[in-house]
Length: 391
Image (cartoon, rainbow, N blue to C red; front, side, top):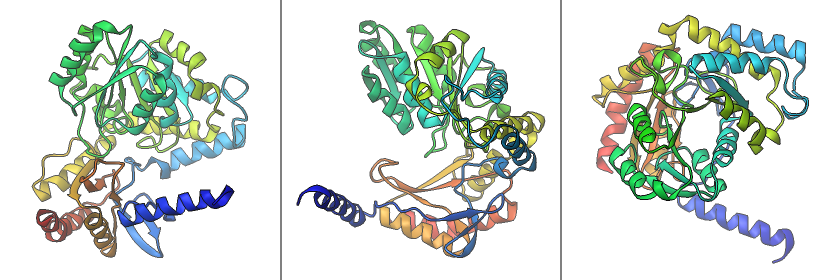
């Protein structure tokens, strides 16, 4: 075959292979018409798999701010930020995020993925060293590959292994960047950021945390660097606006020289159109809610802990609770079982998670009703956990 025929044949063969392994993905139209209510395949479901932890994407103040910004500035920014796309709302949001994260400055990107693809290669390159947690988000690892730096992976949250790698490789590198999630998106556990920061400082390494799932819900809304009260010495605090903030975009909070450098050298900022005004205004309004209502911001973790307590699982550290089933088909079947009972909990399969660790990933939000959590836990205890034990 030649031309498009060979291309179609290649794609069809790959799809058939993925289908046989239960690894093919499909888009399913999902109408999020309420804080936790969704309409999918003609059915009303309670969603337990959305990252909108504070339900702020549906908050009246956040929606009103987005509408007002659209009326004032239009639907798009019109250009990259370094051309004419740097509308006035960016400065407001960057100042607010820097204040929240106790940093000197902040820079906003088009998404969290774009942020990490831009930040990592801007800071390190050939002759430098990257040490990354093995469960770091895909975009951190993609940024690592783009950088051209020497890279080593340390075992998940294993400080001793990280220290071994620093001792073995740091002296031979010009600069060293340590990468980790603050909250691990598929496991829900936390990185030991205070201890990692101390290790980094001892070896003149730069610690960067991806706090996509921490900001808004941990550390009184400030994120994973602030658990326990005092801020961990994390010089590079990255995160997203698309989860608890309820909007869209990514950011880096750091010192003023670092942020100035990123603004002028990160390719994913230079060559991407700036965020629409509505997204930026929505994020500003969301931060207002988070700062004014700390008890509300604490609810997602509280709800997750009610679920783990009901099931006798280890106490949730974040709004994310995984139940690892292992086999891909069994995980899909478990997801279908919950959907038949009115709950949306999608199956997470490789390559998003390691082979043999397919799972149900439950996420909890401030608006989840206690009675729904109790009914879900009872269903999981009776129908899912026995199945997992049998695998």
